[in-house]
Length: 165
Image 1 (tube, rainbow, N blue to C red):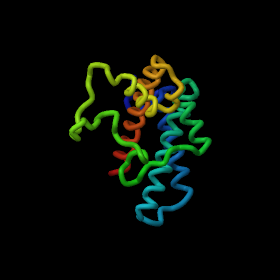
Image 2 (cartoon, helix red, strand yellow):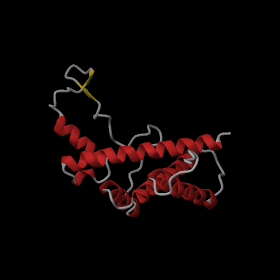
Image 3 (cartoon, rainbow, N blue to C red):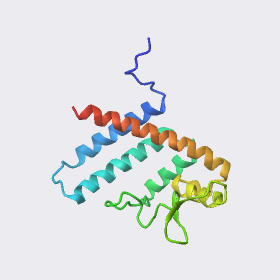
Image 4 (cartoon, rainbow, N blue to C red):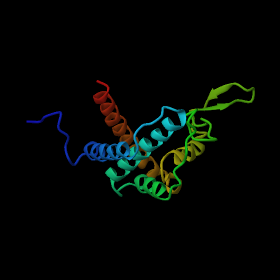
């Protein structure tokens, strides 16, 4: 009947898996691994990250604002570089979760909605294309983007588990 090892060819997970594996095959064929230097490891990481983002955006097609924005960034080569040491975007601090109080201690943001506008602006920075969305569209696109990122992580974890044996 329903075999759990076969994916539905029309599902997001199936489309992403197919595209991502194809991209990984191309990456592997381009240049053999010659070094384990931090620079070379970071270059491989970037190629895999771009392949994952591109595969997910193409899998969603142009139905979503975030996927169109991500594809535009990838095509225009304005894809943000990440700092290889910290794992976060260069020059950005994690202000979305914590902020310093007047006495220098780090405290959680208030939950009473005072910082809602600032938090919506921070969310706009996280979701590709979010800068141009109204709040309703932003929340809808964010939910879909999170679903796609979850799918991406699940597929990548299964690929890693498969090749780790």
